[in-house]
Every structure is written in structure tokens, then in C-alpha cells.
Length: 209
Image (cartoon, rainbow, N blue to C red; front, side, top):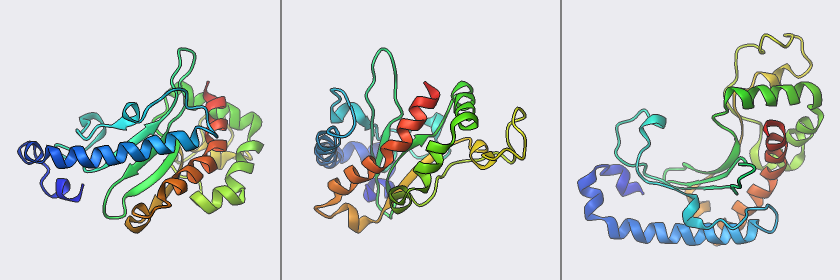
């Protein structure tokens, strides 16, 4: 991935597709193991690693730079059914300390954000318990994501949960240094991280459904 970042163009990528394919195969094998292990905790349906793979090609709508490729390996683990689509568990592997495991509400629709705020307004106690828990603080520190300057007009500025109501995004992120990614225990650490993330995603999924 670091060499792709240095030579981020189509011609270089075409000449080194075999190397990229080998790296992708190793990543997919890791994701399959994560699916098997984490699948004992979370219902991931019948998803396979390749379905979860986030492509190396840039998505112009989501990126501001002009690079042709995303110099990362990434997977988005989520079970899709005809009745529901749940929020994903996300894993990114990238050099330079840019690897992380994360999840939450990243790009909510207006409807989803309204539903979440209504849930916080009426039932914030479970969310407070989650983000104040020792497990959450150990793995993620604090709740992250963009916030508005003030609460939405339908809520008072003195609302007891104003801090949560200001969130436009609600994310939990655990970064991994390069050395951690290379250890034999890395997959286990990702599974433990996703397990620690599950209560937050359960709350968010219930709120926005």
C-alpha cells in the first residue's frame, strides 16, 4: 500500500497488479477469519469477505484529492436483508499509522438523524451507559464525529442531553499502529474491538430503523 501511495497512477497499478492481488488475497483471508470469529457474537448473515471489500479505486464523491487509487485495504462488514440494512463494522489497513477499526453513524440521512435525536431525547440513558462504560473507554476513548454548533431548533439549548443532540455523526474509532497490524494477535484484537463496538451499533440501529 505504501508503494501504491507513492506511485498513485493507472500505469503503475497495471504493472503491479500481481503484487496488489497477493496483498488483497491476504487481506481477504484475514477478513474471512474475522467474519467467522465475530459471527459468533454478531449476526452477519452469510456474508463473505469479498462482498465486504471496499475497492481500491477512488470514489470521487467521497474524496477531495486527485489520486486515482485509495492506498488502503478496507472492509465493511454488515448483513443486508430485504427488511433492514444495519450499520457496518469497518476495518481499514493502511501504512503510516492509518489503520483503524470503527463503526457508527457516518453519513446519516436527514430522517436517520431526526430519529436518532428523538431517541436521545426520550431514551438517552442506554447511550450514556455505553459511552461511559469501561469497555468503551478502553477501546475507543470518547465518542467521535462532527457536531453542530448548537442543538436542533426543536430542542432547548438547555436540554440535559444537548451534548449528544449536537452530534451530526456518532462514531467509535480505534486506531492501530503499524506494528500492531503485523502481530499474530491482530485479528483477535479486531474481533474484540468489534465486540466492544456492538452495544453502540445496537443502540444506533434500533434508533434509526
